Image (tube, rainbow, N blue to C red; front, side):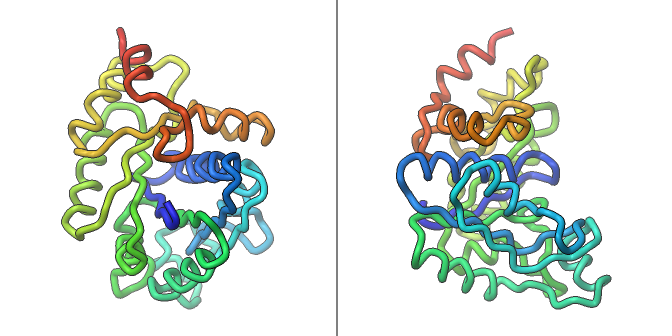
Length: 239
């Protein structure tokens, strides 16, 4: 897990909090961690972005943001409208490689979904992962509709000869509905990759100390945690 790209099947589904949880679990194992946010959109200069939020929740990570654009749009569009230089895959890969040289784990948090464009040439997080030979972790929502978007994302990764580390549910509701409960078993079967964790809704509202203590319990051993997919599916998938 030296370099891991974190993407999602859409926006606002928990990529940042998942990145923070993976970072916290790695730190708990005594590993050094860097978090790289290639393009932060929708925030003005001086406002804390996703990389800062990961650092707040997880603790002692090196947080790096390469580019920032004020409008909440896809990075390519936001850069063009702001008259700013877009961040390109080679720049992102170079930054990640430098961080990897001095950290045990580098987490790259994308913007939106896998194929959201960084520049007008159509470059995406998939291109970054290809340059780095990095696996990709896909964050998914719990409920209705997630099977289709999860399968589309993993198929897009496979078509590009990229390895998908697995899926992780970014926000598990306190009272899951039937679709969410069924999706625990259906997601790995439909997407063809393992389910590697489930984060509870509201995880980011925990104190940093509570978050760091709880994070390993949300993640499978492949991500440095102790979460058991079979046990969780057996208990939460009933109904």
